[in-house]
Length: 225
Image 1 (cartoon, rainbow, N blue to C red):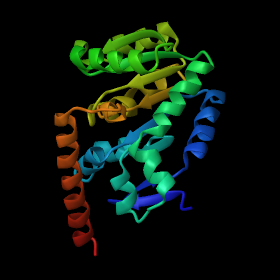
Image 2 (cartoon, helix red, strand yellow):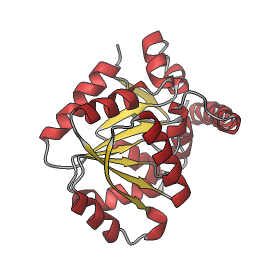
Image 3 (tube, one colour):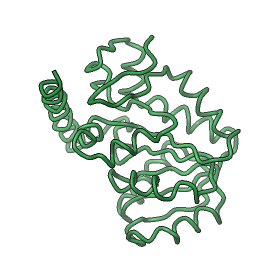
Image 4 (tube, helix red, strand yellow):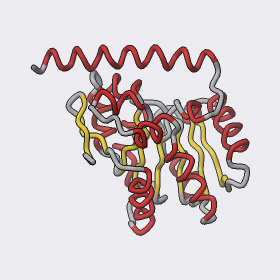
């Protein structure tokens, strides 16, 4: 199976769930912060026109495909891989394994409302998750030292981020070296797709983003033929 796919001039990992889990476990043996990034059709569409988002994706140590349309546009039709992407299987297995190993988590969100939604989702699905702190980015604007200090004081194993691009991309490129945790797991603002029954509005938004993604792919191919 091809381990790298190329879309919109970007390289994206195409590992199986088992390979993704093996790679993620290796991050705990490293001294620096390692970035796991879930990429969606919405994010890749944005990256086609925003260099900061492209650079943010490129700096990830593990890229997890979060939409099956990314795979099919790259010519990947493996039933296993399509299921893993559409059902967000890496997120489920990674969090369950981390909780089983007594890992601690710090949550980061853009707004108080998004943090509340993120917390509600995690507490329902992962009731034994040990959350040692959280931070709302809107509270500090672009002055990131306060958030970094809170993260480092809490000393989590894993930072779970529901931030959106391009702010998250710019933040990590600028501040990554200051964060003492081992893993920054960017689940993005699309973490709700992992829920069993997403709302009608959520499903409608997904359809819009998927349609736009196909147009972005076709326009990019036309320009680079």
